[in-house]
Image 1 (cartoon, rainbow, N blue to C red):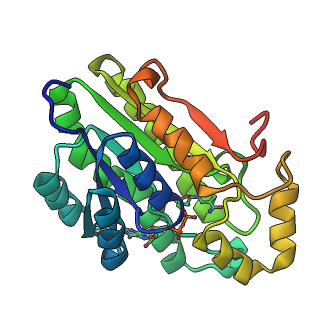
Image 2 (cartoon, helix red, strand yellow):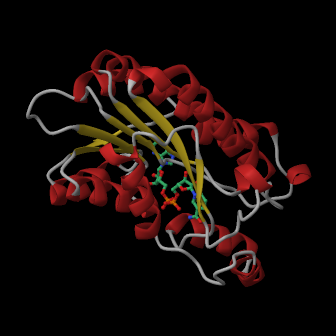
Amino acid sequence: MAGGARRRALVTGGASGIGAAIARRLAADGLHVVVADLQGDAARELAATIGGTGLVLDVTDYDAVTAAAAAHGPFAVLVNCAGIDQHAFFTQTTPADWRRLLSVNLDAVLNTTHAVLPAMQAAGWGRIVNVASEAGRLGSRGGAVYAAAKGGVIAFTRSIARENGRKGITANVVAPGPIDTPLLQQAVAQGGEKLLAAMTGATLAGRLGTSDEVAATVAFLASEPAGYITGEVLGVSGGMGCGA
Ligand code: NAI
């Protein structure tokens, strides 16, 4: 990208957990980070500490996402990290649950990508990193619709990689395993300590991961030297996805 201005990164879900760690890490790498989250106050507080911009944004709202991209872009880096989960067996869920899960975990990725990609194409440079989940490759007992959404993110990301490979734009997925964040603590509250034991037991490392471990991988994929990596799914999951 030409010019001396700091590259801008849009990080959705950047007010909490993994997204907050990503926002801090990208800022440390020299980017101006726009932290976009439903939790506007937390987004603004974090942004103030990293010299970025914080804003309240519902990523399921296409018009709001488009307006935010126009007001705060152009973005060289897009990290989709906003996400929600619900621990319940499929037959215990309702169509309203499905719509909510698909809307935040999948539709939102379409919204942000549609909003920022044209500017990346015009610039001839871009990095898209989507935070999916090992559930998107392996499936999830008690998270079928969440897994369907994350699997959709993987297929969508690979498609964007295919469409933009010759335009200087990479698109990759980071697939976390169990990471110690508010989202995971909420799942444990719903599913109990047995769920926690099952999650750590499914990793080769035998422990939860940290948000910083995910952020380091995202930051690498967002960097200049990662330009020959695209359409990949990289597990940060203590080996949970080994062989998938
Ligand atoms: P978290 O709950 O700590 O953070 C998620 C953030 O997304 C929150 O700040 C929330 O306000 C925001 N958000 C939710 N709906 C939104 C919306 N409609 N618009 C804007 N922001 C919205 O969760 P965590 O654990 O940091 O998760 C981050 C990502 O990592 C999610 O996509 C999640 O599915 C994924 N992930 C997390 C794993 C874990 O074990 N923590 C495992 C695998 C994937």
